[in-house]
Image (cartoon, rainbow, N blue to C red):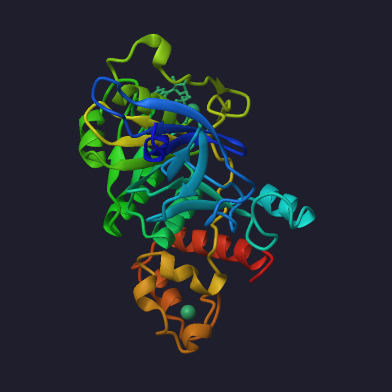
Amino acid sequence: MSVEENIKRGTVISGSWNIFTVRLESGGEREGPQILECRIKGKVLKGVDSFYNPLAPGDRVTVEQGQIVSLEERKNCFTRFNQKGFNAKKSAAGGGYGTAEAAGSQIIAANVDLVLCVSSPVFPPFRPRFLDRVLVQADHAGIPAAVICNKWDLHGRDIDIEERLEDFVRIGFPVLRMSAQTGKGMEELTRLIAGRFAVLVGQSGVGKSSIINALRPALPETQRIRTGTINEKYDRGNHTTTQSLLVELPGGGAVVDTPGIRRFVPDGISPGDLIMNLREFAPLAGTCSFGLSCSHVSEPGCKILEAVNAGAIHEDRYESYLRIREELSGMTGF
Ligand SMILES: Nc1nc2c(ncn2[C@@H]2O[C@H](COP(=O)(O)OP(=O)(O)O)[C@@H](O)[C@H]2O)c(=O)[nH]1
Ligand SMILES: [Mg+2]
Ligand SMILES: [Zn+2]
């Protein structure tokens, strides 16, 4: 066998620390896709040293003799701040992957075309705060995003939920009210994904894995993703999905199923830059009396506060702004 034949390109479909599942570009139609469990060759892979985890679903890699030898430059990264990683790397600076400064940055998926922020009206309850955080991160990463409100079959006309969903539409995010259980909205979802590479992000129990199963209706029972039950006492889903996983869709495109995230902390955004990632706030940047140094909390002549009072910015989005800002301000490094 020549050296070239031994070097293959592939896509990471799952993995966390040491072992990654890679789908190799098939060596021909008859062979079909080849799935391989791989380790990273040596200790450090170029291009990954500023992250908590070295590789994530969607990463394009080169595999040589069963080992990952290189990573293709990423188009983008959908990340979140992971305090655990931050602490671990702080205490183990110099060892393993990542640097002490930036190891709180956890890659959820790479080379993403669409972020689907999944929520539900009940079980678990609608949490607009969570959606706003995910949308801020998507805008920061330059990835288009859409809001999904699943379990619409359980929805009992909550006026606050409707109002927030309408506001997402108003500021330019597609909103899909659907039910993985009844099939409502499944055609729209397929059209929304449209053969692209999408990542589903949401709290545990909102129905991410159920949605992915519904996107692949013809699959045998054994290949379906396990879905959880809702813990009624806590109104939360059990964490059935423990690892992110890239799943191919029958009509083309792929989605990443992710474990439920209880709290989503934006990554790589300073408090001063936050409004740049809230799209109805962004055009007002620099227009306040205090210019770019305005914190938009209580300053006189603040255009953001004026916009909130005039109804051009939804009060609840402003509340999200205040809370995210406070959290980012308390984080080391800013
Ligand atoms: N009523 C209703 N239940 C759903 C729907 N989608 C998912 N579920 C249920 O919600 C629970 C959690 O679903 P799962 O897909 O595991 O959520 P995940 O944690 O986000 O992956 C399971 O019991 C599902 O059967 C839906 O559209 N309507
Ligand atoms: Mg799941
Ligand atoms: Zn201001």
